Each structure stands twice: as structure tokens, then as C-alpha cells.
Image (cartoon, rainbow, N blue to C red; front, side, top):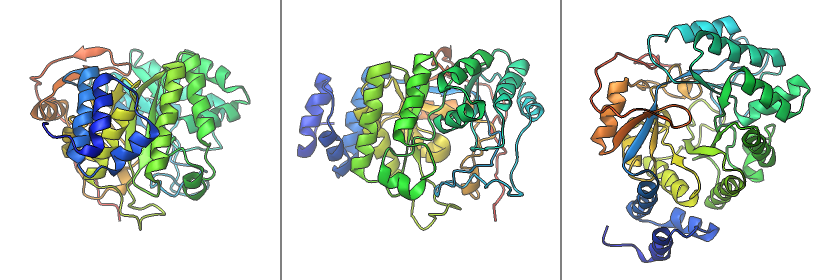
Length: 381
């Protein structure tokens, strides 16, 4: 790119010299009218850190309960306690889900769900062990920070002790959900019963201390403002300076359908790309930035690989969390389709495990059939 807009010249100099961006720089990036220029800056950082690689994973999602007492206004997945639509998967049910995909060489099983106050501590140990019994070699990435708070409460034990015990049971990393936006204003309006930012950060800090790497997210496209988003990113960056325990930053696109705030329009593709780019530029100490194709669409995610993202997630089995917020939306890709999309975007596909160990660099994939949730989702009425 031969032309850098005047308002981005100082940031361009900082990016090229490896200087850390400030809160004011973050606000400039959100306000800059030239999205391509912001993406160009993010791509400089992305290629310095990751070269031309685009990571993906073969994984399975298991959402063990949809019962939740947090009542978040932005969520279309949960049902409140005592609702007839609620479900809880038994350890045997979890094993059935795992067995359904034994023909696929999955390297990661991702388990998250609602906050169900009826579940005892032993339940969480049992479902992790249930997975490892069927697939002992698979990595279990389990429980958001909000779930960990509930698990410790159910156990009546310190969080650290609970993490050590679940790590021994088979948990090897922690997803990044539940962070939403670190803003008291947003929390008071949208998720007032949930753990606040200090508690979320303490869960991550404790996990890093016991040797459990975690990920981090930010939910955008609702009522948050740029100042709150930049402050969120700086908080994550400061904790990473302290612990070096985060693997990946994943900006999550809000989908308003069937939520309590479905009057909001939700983010556009321009917003999706800007969030990825700003995240990459602000989080100079995060090894990876992910575009979650289920939420962003595979088409936006292909472009995002040039706007700061180096990870496109994976061949996700049975994803439910935002599933009901879509109508006639295709939410499955075979491994071949995913690799082909990465190659089509001009990047080098690399299959990974949950800790970014290289599993395959193959570009020519034999069609292996659908490995995600059903190819056409039902229309939810």
C-alpha cells in the first residue's frame, strides 16, 4: 500500500518500529474511515508474527446444558431453570456424542454451556473423564471463566484447587468466552448477574498459574463504544504481560436474532474486519488472532486472514451457542472445503491442535465428507 492516510501515519511508524499502541491509537483505529488502511497495518503485524500461515483445527463442540441462570440479554442459547426446553447431557450422553465422530481424527473437544446451578461438582469431573475414556488422546478445552466460577461454587473449594483437579481429570486448556466487554455500563444493562471483569481476569490469572493456557474474547456489535473496546483490549494485554498465558484473541460478532435486544442491527462485515484488525494491532503480545467463521461467515473470514487474523477455527462439530440465531444458514465445512478456502485466500493452511502444535501442512485434501453439524440447519420458527 503506497498511501497511508494522515491520521494513521504515526501508528504506521509505531507498527514498523515495534512500538506498543496506546489507548488513543486504538480510538484512532476505530475512527479511521479507511478500513483497508487499518487492515494493511494489521496485516504487517500478522505477517511479522505468523508469516503466511493460516491455522485450523478439527474439533468437536459439546454444549452439555442449555439451562442458565444468568439471563444475559444478548444470548439466544439459554433457557432459564425449570423451563421445559432445558436439557442436561449425562456423562453417558457425552460419550455418545464423542462416539458419533470417532471416524474423524479430531484433536480437540470444546465443552462449554450455560450456568446450571443444579449441577454438582462431580458432574464436571465426570463429563471430562467421560470424554477422555472414549478419546484419551484428544485435548479437552473446557469451561469459560463464568463456568469456572460456578464450578468452584458448587465444589465449595478455592478456584485454584478446582482447576488443578479438573486439569488432572483431563482439561488441557480453557476457552475465552464470558468476557463480553469489560465495561460496568454494558454489564449493568446486558449481563448484570454475570461475573465482572475483575473476576474474569482472576480466573484467567489462576488458570495461567496452574498451567492451563486460556483464550480471550470480546463480544462486539451491541451497545458498546470504542473507548470500552480499547480499554478491554488493553486490560487483556496487561494481563498477558503479567502471565503470558493467553493463546488466542477471538473477537465475537453479536447476532441479535432471538435475543432480548433483537431491535439492534448487529455488526456489518466492515465492523467484523475492523474488530479483527484493531485486536491484532493492540494485542502485540498475543500469539494468535482468530476469525470465528461460524459467526463471521467463511467469506468474511477469508478476507480477515488479510486483516490480522491467522486462525480460522475449524471443522466444528455440533456448535449450538449461536446456532438458533440463524435461519437458513449453512454452518458446516468439510476439512477439504476449509483448506480450499484458506488456499483460495492466498494463505498456507496448517492443521493444529489446541496448543498450536503442527499436525498437518497438506494443501491437497481428499474429500472426507461432512464433518460439522447438519449441512442445512432447520428453520427455527
